[in-house]
Structures are given as C-alpha cells and as structure tokens.
Length: 257
Length: 278
Ligand SMILES: Nc1ncnc2c1ncn2[C@@H]1O[C@H](COP(=O)(O)OP(=O)(O)OP(=O)(O)O)[C@@H](O)[C@H]1O
Ligand SMILES: [Mg+2]
Image 1 (tube, helix red, strand yellow):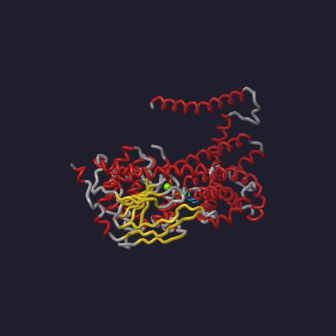
Image 2 (tube, each protein chain N blue to C red):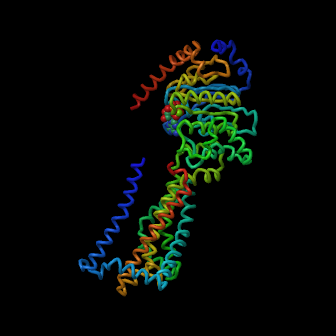
Image 3 (cartoon, chains in turn red, yellow):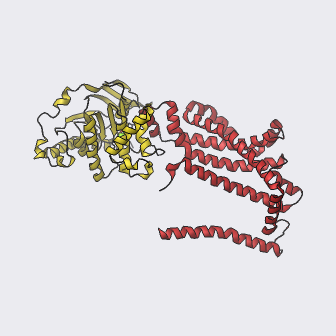
C-alpha cells in the first residue's frame, strides 16, 4: 500500500516536472534566439502580456463573453438533447423515426454550418449560442440514447415485476442507469463547445476569447494570441475538473471504496 | 433423537387441505418464428403456503416457466390461474437469476423498491425495510451500494427486496447458485427461518438436488428440452427444519439419490441435445 502511494506521488511529481522543464527550455531557446521569438515569444513575455490584459480588463470582458455563450449554448443544446435522448432510449418507434435524421446530420462538421447559422441568426449573440448548442446537442443525444438502450434488460424486468409505472421506470431505472453514459456525453459536448465558440468568435464577434485570438493575428500581437490559447486550455481543464466532480456527486455508486 | 422425529407419517397433511394458489393446465411456451418449444405442457397445482421446487437440466425451461408465472412472459398455450387471498397485497415478487440489484441504489433503497413503487407511505416503508434488513443481518450495511457488498450479501438483499414487498407468491430463480457451500448453507437456514415466519407460497428453481430436498415441500423434476414434468416428489421432512441435522437423516440421502437417478437421464439428454444442435 505504502509503496503504491509513493509511486503515485512520484507520478504526480513527474507530471508536474515535464511541462516546467519544457517551459524552461522554451524560455532559454527564445532568449538565445534559437527559436524565432516573433512566433514563439518567451513564456515570460506571455505572462507579462497576460498580466497587462488582466489589468486592462480586456481579458475579463472577453472571457465572460465567451463563457456566457458557452454555458447558454450548452443549456440550449444539452437539455433538449437529454430529454429527446431519454425518450428515444425508451421508445423504440421514436428511435426508429429519429435515428436516420441523426445519422444523416451528425457527420456534418459543425464548423461547416457556421455560414448558414450566421445567415439565419445574424451576427448577434444568438448565432454563437446556436453554434455551441449544435455542438452540444449531438454527443449528449447520442450518449443518452445509448445509455438508456444499453441498460441491462434484467433491471427493466425488475421494474415490471415490482409494478413500476412508465414514469417510475423512467425515473428509477432509465435515468440513473444512463447517467454514466450521459456524463460522458456532457464531457464530449463541453470539448465540442469550446472548439465551436472559438471558431465562431473568430469569424463573427467583437468580443470573446476567439475574437481576441483572431484579432491578435490581424494586428500581429503574438503574445496575446498565446494568452488566448492558454486561457482556452485552462478553461478546458477547469470544465473537465468540474464535470468530474459533478459526476462523482451524481454517480456515487461508481466510486471505488 | 431429533433426526428421527423429523420424519412424520403425514408431512403434508395441512397443505393438502390448503386452497390451490397456482394452477397450470397444459401450459406451453413457444419462442420466435421458428416456434422453438421451451415449455411443453405443464399441469400443476400449487397449494397456498407450499414451498414448491423445480429442478431440471440447464435450458429445460425453468426460468421461462417462472417468468410466465411472474407475468413477464406470455403463455403460448394453456391456462394459468392464480387465486388471490388478499388482493391488497402484490401477487408475486421475483428473486432473479443472477445480479439484479440496481447498482445505483443503496441497500436500503433496493430493499424499499417494491413498497415505494406501490406508493406505500415512507414511514411504513422504513419500518418494513428495517425489519427485513435486520432479520437478514444487513441493517448496518443499508447505506452501501451493491458494488460494495459481497456476492452473498447482494443475494440476501435481493431476497429482502422480494420479501419486504410482501407478495402472496415468491418466485426464486436459482438465488444461491453463485454462492459457495458455506454461504449457501447459512442462507438456506435464513431463508427457511424467514419463510417459516411468513408462510408464503414459494416457487423455487435450483440446479442443486441437495438444495431442493433441504428447502422444498414438493419437487418437480423437469425433462430436458422441451421442458415437461418428469416426476413430482413429496419431501417428507417436517418443519421447522434444521439444515444441518437434516443431512444426518438416512431418508435424506435416499431422497437425494432417488432424485439424482431421475435427473441424470435428463441431464445426459440435455447434453446430447446441445451437441446435436451444433
Ligand atoms: N426470449 C427467448 N427467445 C428465444 N428462446 C428463448 C428465450 N428465452 C429462453 N429461450 C430458450 O428457451 C429454453 C429454456 O430457457 P430457460 O432460460 O427457461 O432455461 P432454464 O431451464 O432456466 O436454464 P438454466 O438452468 O440454464 O437457467 C432455452 O433453450 C433458451 O434458449
Ligand atoms: Mg434459468
């Protein structure tokens, strides 16, 4: 046991060390001119720009704009996907009716729909929210349908044997049984949402992290571009940590003792 | 000695007078378009309060028969009549073959499932669940999830889930087959204890002849597929039974031998069937 623990401790330490070492190398290489600092500015200068952007409030404005669109889009796309998915998982006829639609539209890259979305919803907030919603909709829908459909038949037999009503079967078996799969879908949706918010803000926005990155390219403030990338990476990490935590709360039976 | 006194001349005298609870007439079950016959004409009457055991080779249709009794499977032919003595109680509850506890519910919530589904007030649910979990020695594990229990504990919870629902009929499909001998012996004792306290009608499926003789009032031996009745045997031991002492009884060994003899042919036939089917 003790041996295992120190091993995990060491693993963690190594995991921390590698990026630090790389950053150190990068810094050294940029300062000595080994790599072109116009494309790969030294980490210290990126951190400096980061501080400046925070101080000016610019970063905060862009961050909140992106976050708002992201969360709104997740809700707008995710909630209907969840309910439709549960319904499709339970009702075979509904699944038969809707499956082909999903199969046909799912492979279309969501970024390819952006012009159409802009055409329909205009350049305002709605189009960005719709893009995220589209990205969140599919993974959550598909994972929910699969989660319900793959519930072991014996649990449904137990439900019937104990005379559970349709609604009770839904609430006590379909939903909790599908929850692990649903949460996996939420994780995918969040990743998809981050990609799509960045893309749509680059094309059609005057604020947001995506806009910040795109604007930095246009005015060639490369440091700012890196700050934007860093912020997106941190967001991704933050969200997956939050979702993991929510998962632990919602699915306590998966926890190992 | 106690061993001798276990043999009484008319062991089923009381049950013979009990009203019939389950009556099957020519019950058949076909599956699919090929019309595969799983159960081929069963005629039995099971009196109220009887512990009825079904043994038979694998694939002979035991589970199918039980599922028809539970209403989880339709009957292709024949009639099934179930008489109710108390319509306010559920007709039957099943202990399923294999793991069937909801992994997402605690021991407590699993045990409470049936009562909650029929809208029993939460206070009464609590009383009943506590009683049953205490009876079977799992009350202090009530907040655990099934994956935090041993196989034997899980099996006990699924038995409690069925008993706590207080049905007229208990259907049990090889509830102990996955357990080791020692656990099995303890659970036989526990099951007999709680069954004798409630005297529900039980239909119990097993592969184990020892289990059948230890627990049952009456044993139906089934033929290899297609499943029919091969023999019905009365078990002469009195209640309450002592699981350990029972095995001392020479009549116990004789009965086990007698049942094995009849079962052996069917098990061999089932093997030939499955080899021929390849
Ligand atoms: N839904 C089904 N569709 C088609 N065939 C089925 C179905 N359920 C069971 N069968 C077939 O019916 C036969 C009897 O199955 P059943 O499960 O009742 O056997 P069993 O006696 O319970 O066997 P075991 O002791 O191994 O549990 C088997 O040959 C099985 O393949
Ligand atoms: Mg079976």
